[in-house]
Every structure is written in structure tokens, then in C-alpha cells.
Image 1: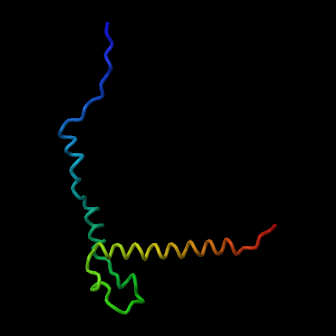
Image 2 (image 1 turned 90 degrees about the horizontal axis):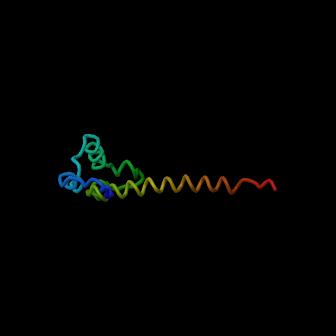
Length: 92
């Protein structure tokens, strides 16, 4: 009796092609993409005097500026937490 090593099943050529092609957008993905397109920079930066939506019409730039604004807020929160932590008197 000869022993044969089991070989793992090979994917069908159709399956490998499916993995290479992007999946069609679901309604959830499409709605989130539409929401990203309609970023109102004037709402995000109310202190600015100019129309930022006109100044930055590209959706990639608007998305980048939105992320920068969110990160700026997060950094402010972290700074406040660290300030509170280090300003507490030590009980040594």
C-alpha cells in the first residue's frame, strides 16, 4: 500500500477571477460615498470668512480637510486629558 499526500483543493479559475475584480457597490456603500461627496466645509470651519466649498471643489480635498478637522479635535481632547492627569497633585 502506498501513501499519498492529500492535496488541498485548488480554487476554480472563476473564483480566482472573482477575487481580483472589485465587488459591486452595495446601497450602503453608495450612500456613504454620496455622503462623502457632499461635505460642507463651511459647516466644518464656520470661523472662515470665505466660501470653502467653492475654494475646494474636489471631493478628495474636502475629505482630507474633514479628516484634518476631526484629528485636530481629537488632539485637543487628548491634550486636555493629559493636562488634567499631570496637573493633579501627587499623593507621595
